[in-house]
Length: 336
Length: 150
Image (cartoon, rainbow over all chains, first blue to last red; front, top):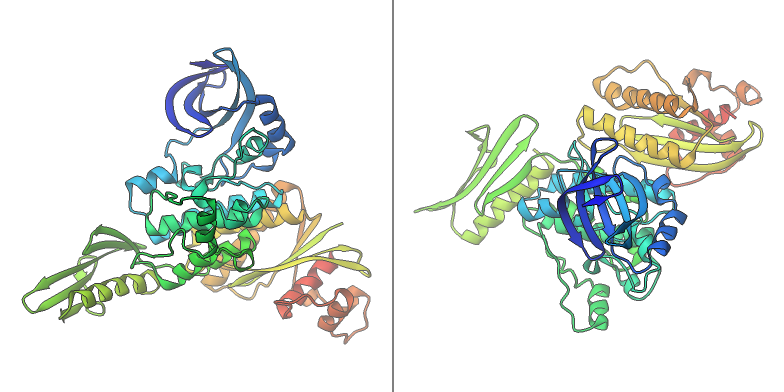
């Protein structure tokens, strides 16, 4: 399909508001991603985006670069098209669906996003739809926020857009305008999903009142954490998704500083229930839980050699052994 | 004119911005930002680039000054202080912002038209007020080097 000077060469994905194609810019001979927005009022959409000066205010290394926004005639219909840099490594959502996200990876992604978000917030631009699907990986694996400003264009459309539903805070459900703190809440939910490896979060409420009640009581999403997540990180994630605005991080800087104050050591990945692999600097680690006739054993190896400081033997109870296993993982994530 | 002063330490960076004049300054902003824990040298340098860019973008200063001490050459100090100052110089150069360093020994009462023996920490408090939290010796010294550029 030809769209102005672009020729589509592949389909990237679709969402509620349109489809994204990989395309070639025939004049500059570079690849781009083009998002075709399905809206009833293309001109209003464009005016809202232009008025917010999204293009000028969102140029940052942690924000997906928008090259141009224009209306093109597609099948004789005017369609707003957002032309962005093409990032072949895809989204955090796709990564989350196919890989184990380590605590370190989750923290790196959130820290990167907070840099971009802080930059946009300084220019009074809010994202309003932060979710793993809107975070992409750049060529150096740095995370970049995508779809910045799309919400500004969608705000005037004849349907109510309030962001990805499972990520919206209680105040938005009550009709409050979205702002810095609502973005931070959505990022907090994203953080929660990343550290816990939750690819999808679905709403299952009879009505909005039930949903709002669950949000206010912090029952949705249920604040359960995987056993490998260290407590200081758990506390930080909980704070980032507090239902009361006064209890949340107030700024991106405050959020990022809290994250970056936590020292991180071994980056553990789950291989199987009882085997995890880790790395720190040039060292490789492995931890295994297994049982023999005399009880449960935990082997902790650094570069293939047993480190007796962390090994355990003859644990009588499986639950106890599991607790010890994850305690070692949690502890060595923060200190060795 | 907006002046921004920065003090780099191995744990934190302190920043104060002022507008107005040397004798009649107006407090604009201050912050203490902690360096990330356990970052490698390349990670720290990248962090500095991101962080300092945000600070410069947010405050939009006409002049930048930072405290330079040259008697400390431990590994940590080089990576966490001097590299940060290098990145600050680079960013200011790219953005066309005037930048200079101030050595602690040059911060003397005479520079502020005050008699010898004046306690400069008390002087800066009286001039621009106190702005807790973290309104400590480092922050006051940062305010003084910021003031010198007005």
